[in-house]
Each structure stands twice: as structure tokens, then as C-alpha cells.
Image 1 (spheres, rainbow, N blue to C red):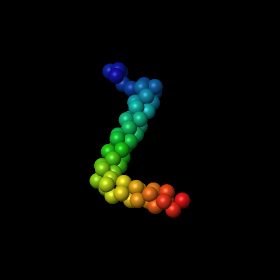
Image 2 (image 1 turned 90 degrees about the vertical axis):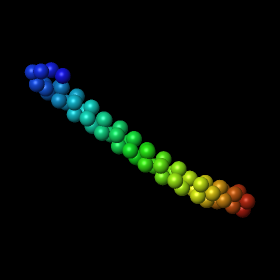
Image 3 (image 1 turned 120 degrees about the vertical axis):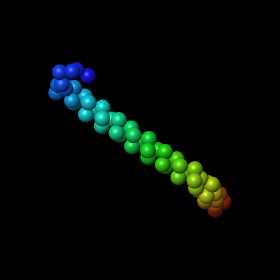
Image 4 (image 1 turned 30 degrees about the vertical axis):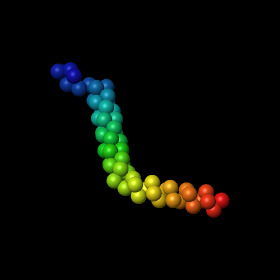
Length: 60
């Protein structure tokens, strides 16, 4: 960071970094939320998926 004030290149890099950082924050939040939800109803999901797979394999 320069004490003379941000130049055009500095502000462009800064905004680019801010966008990237915000994007990664959203990725982390979404990933955490999805994994939390998956862990919450993981047993029901696996049971439904397993029974569906078994039914499909049995019928075929």
C-alpha cells in the first residue's frame, strides 16, 4: 500500500482481490451450508437412495 494514494492499477488489483475474496467467502458459506444440510438428512438420503438403487437393480 502506497502512502501517496491508490493508483489506477492499485485500485484495479484491489477491487479484483475483493471480488475474488468475496467469491471464495460465498463458496465457503455455500459449501458449509450444503454439507451441514447433507449431514443433517444424510441417513434419510442414503436410505432413499439405497432403496431406490436396490429396487431398480432388482427390477432390471
